[in-house]
Amino acid sequence: MRDHDFDRKWLDLLVCPKTGQELTYDSKKKLLLTKDKKISYAITNGIPRLIDD
Image: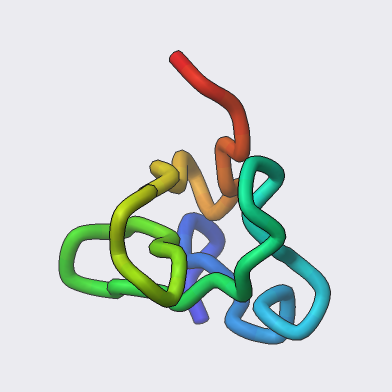
């Protein structure tokens, strides 16, 4: 794993702060997505941004 990659082990702990849904990781787009794929969160330098911009 490179320093700027998201560590997938966090998926066991993280949930969407808006809906409480589990999150999935899209490695190509570098995003965390809710299970229904309606909400996405960017990952910057391996750190998920779980806030609204």
